[in-house]
Amino acid sequence: MILAEVFRVALEQTDVSADSEWEDRNWDAVVTCEYERLQGDLDWSFSIYAANEVELRPTEAELASSVAQRLSAPVFTTWDARFPWVRRAALPDGSFTLARVLQPEDDSPAYVIDAAESRIPGLPNVPVMQFPESVHACDSHTPITDSMRCTGASPRDGGLTLN
Image (cartoon, rainbow, N blue to C red; front, side, top):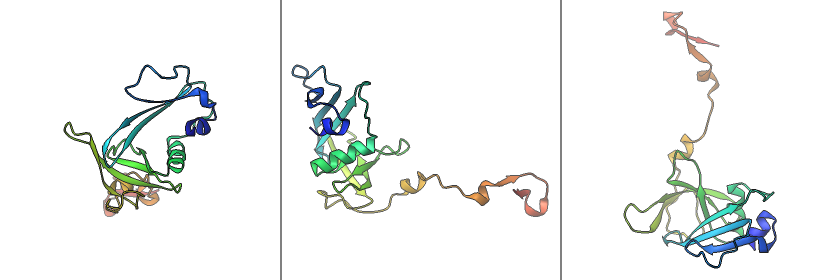
């Protein structure tokens, strides 16, 4: 029902199935969701797809926020490809935070939420801290240093000319 509302399609045009289920799927669905049970701090993994003919395509953040609000549970999505261990968490109140999610290094399927930038409902033991990755990801322009260029014209000012 959530997917039908978010993508504005008829309920009959959706399919929600376990990722290992192949027999009872709605193969005519234009919006599908595959789910898998996880262990550790993350309970479920969802993969949501929309066919090309679906007109309304929410962003990943909009979709995560809608699902988090409807399920009253945090939803974790990718954030920045440079920092795959940091995930964006959509919270049930409509806000977002960042969380560091450690994936299993061995055959263990347990995911661990190591820290978050703010409290996450349902995860009271997760430490709250600022992530250096969130600062590094900001594209902050520095007008003075960005406008400096080395000309080699003046040894007195180190060869720098301010534009």
